[in-house]
Amino acid sequence: MIDAASFAAAWRALGASNDGADVHRRLIACWSEKQRHYHTLQHLRECFEQLGTVRALMQRPAEVAIALWFHDAFYDPTREDNELRSADWAREAQVAAGIAQAAAQRVHDMIMATVEHGPQQGVDAQLLVDIDLSIFGADHARFDESDEQVRREYIHIPEADWRVGRRRMLSGFLDRPRLYGTEHYYAMLESRARDNIERALSRLDRGQ
Image 1 (cartoon, rainbow, N blue to C red):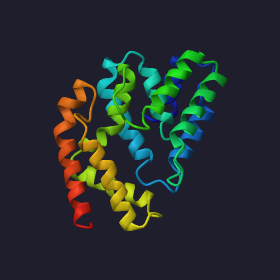
Image 2: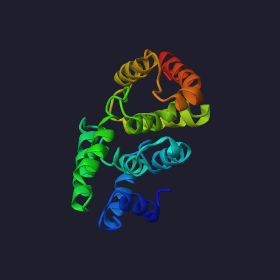
Image 3: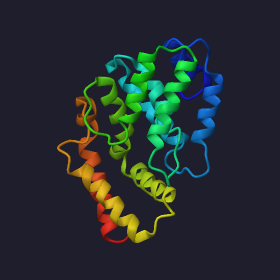
């Protein structure tokens, strides 16, 4: 799913003049950086596992695939412009490979949708956001593991500040009328996602 051949298939489906081998190698290197604990190849593989289950619902699945590849390509926990840098690189790399500007911009916009993970107008962008949030609806063990992984990425933040910020973020998701914009993910993951978030908030309240 994240091998060079799969990347090349999506890349060429967008009209690229090459197989994107150099881009793929750089992406793998980015997702393998040592400061990452959650935003790793594990997360990328999980995203592509999800993509495989909802591909038939997408209008332009190759664009969603490339957006997933790039959506956390840059990830420095001390910066706030990771999505923008990732989206800009995605657009530049696509245009350089001969992909149409319109397609490159759609990919750029989908990546930027992961800044707030809010409701989207287009089905592809909404599916991408829901895929990225699918970790909330994972089984308890995997969600708890991801919670610990995210904390390790932000180990530079003092514990008291971390609890305040993490609580604010998780509570913000829980306060939404729904976490998932598509009916597919709402039916499949909404209930478990809310349970996972509530358990995480409880741990924060206990200082764990």
